[in-house]
Image 1: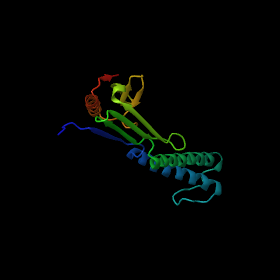
Image 2: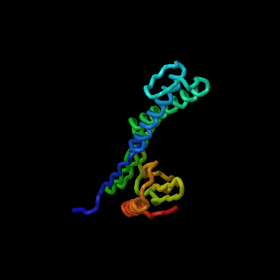
Image 3: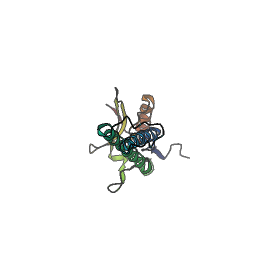
Image 4: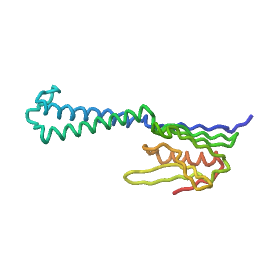
Amino acid sequence: MNSTIDIRYDLILGSRRTSNYIWCILSFIGGFGFFTTGISSYLQKELLPFTKVDSIAFIPQGIVMTFYGTIGLLLSFFLILNIILNIGGGYNKYDKKNEKIEVFRLGFPFQNREIYLSYKFKEIRSIKLSLQEGLNPKREIYLCTKDQRQIPLTRIGEPLLLSSIEEEAVNLSLYLNVPLESQ
């Protein structure tokens, strides 16, 4: 019986993250409030029970509030579409038996909705660990091919713990039997 795992399958979380749900809800509530207040100042009627529109002139405050509300509602609509379509979601599949790596991601509709990359083990040069600390930290693992391509393997947006991403990179390089590079 073979004790090694023949297929490794890593699920990649796309836009269906908790932070996107929170931003979508907050953007909708804020956008709806601003939009309704702006329209209320134009109509001189209180569309929301907790607003007083008699002190808000439509020009310039009402127009600005309507504009900000529209932007907030459009942003929440964009986020909900990203969540529904699961933009960035997919998987990485490493098959030792067939010596094949598959990278699959979901993109935006209409053009290249499904991104599928396939490589043989012999085409892989190394695994690269890219760490950038600071205000906006980046912690990513790349699959480096012999033709100088770098394919990101980790999810975008939520930096992982330093210890977990290092451990994942080491395990992946050992699994594929390729060197580990660090940047």
